[in-house]
Image: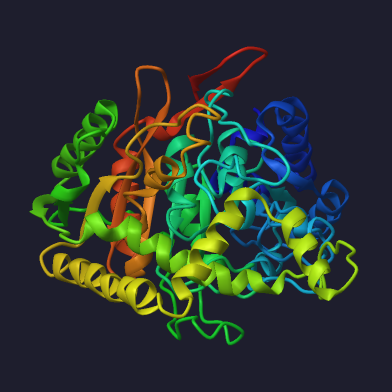
Length: 495
C-alpha cells in the first residue's frame, strides 16, 4: 500500500489503529516528491526537516490517545499564506527573501490540529493568473499531461494533490483560483463563502474577493478540512461572526428533492464539447439521485469578466503599493528614494502583476473613477442580485467549472484576454461572495480531467458539499489518478 495515494479519512483510520506511523506517511510523501517533483514542479519551498519534527510531535499525541481529523496528515500550503519563520514568497521575486514573523490564522488552526507541513506551493505571482505560468520562479505542470498547465493561481497546490505529493492542500480563490485548477487537475476544490474562513495572514490580492479554501482528493476530505479552518476571527474584520456547522455530518443525507438550477448563460458557444457533454451528464446523474432540475437565468453573467478585472485590479493596485523595497522583501539600490522605488518594483514584479497594477491604478485615477471603478461596483451588485433571485427557486446551481480542459504551456501566454476568459464560469461566484466547489465529472478523449461546479447560497457550504458528495459517490471519476512515468502522463484507476 502506497500511503501517499490515500486521503485524509483513510489515513486517519490507519493512524488511529496504530497500523502505520506518522513518519511512515511523511516518508512516503517525500519519496513521492523525490520521484515526480522534478517534472511537476509544484513546490516553491520544501520543509522536510520541519515536517519530521511536526510528525514526531503528532505521533506523541496519537500515542497519547488523542484523535483529530488532521492529526499527522501531511499537507501543502499555497505560498501566499504566512508561515512563521518559513519563506513566504507569493512566487514573486520581490518577496524572494521574506520570512513572516507570524502565522496566518488558517495555518495556526492547522498547527492546533497537529498537521504536518510538507512545503509551500507555487502560484501565479501574487495569485494573478489562471495557469501558474506567471510565477516568478518556474511553471508548474499538470500531472495528467506535463505539456499542459495545471490551472491557476493555485496550480501548485492542485498539482501537488493530483500527483500525490501531499495528502491535501490549501489554496486561495479570488476569481476561480481554487476551482479552475482543481477542475483541470481532477481534484476537489472548494471556495467557501466570503467571510467563512479568515484571511488574516493571506497576502492580499483583492481584499473583497480573496478567500482561502481546501484542495483535496475527495469531498469528505474537503469537509473535514473545512471544519478545521472555518470560523470567526477577530484579527480579520471581514470574518463573519457565525459559528460554522459540522460539515462532514451533512454528507450522509441524500439529495432527494434538492432543486438544482441550470443557468442558460453558462452553456455557451466555444465551450469544449467534451466539457458540455460531461457536465450535462453530471446534471442527469444528480437528477437520477432524486434532485429536481430547474432552468434559471443569471442575466448579468456577460458583464462578470469586465467587472472582475476592474475591481480586482483596482484593489491589487492599492494592496501592492506596500512593496517598495523599504519595509520588507527585496530592495534594489538607487541614487535616491524615488529611483530605489522604481528599480525595486521594476525588477521585483513580473509582467502580469505590472499589467494589473497599471490597469487598477488607471481605473482609480481622477476622472476615471466614476466611469470604471464605481460602475463596476454597481454591476457587481446586479450580479449578486442575480444569484439571490436564482436561489429563491433553487438550492444549488450546477455549471461547468472551466470552458475547456487544460491547455498547453505557452498556448495563451501572449494573449491576456484569452487567459482571463479561462475563469469565465468562476468569477461571478467571487463577485457575489457565495460558495462554490469543483469536483471531477469526466475526461476528454485525450484523458484530461473535466470539472463540475456546484454553487450554493451564502454560508450554505453544507448543502454544496452534500450534493457534491452524493454525485461523487455515485460515480468513479474521483478514483482516477494520473500515472507519472518517464514519458507521458496517463490516468490509471486507483487501487
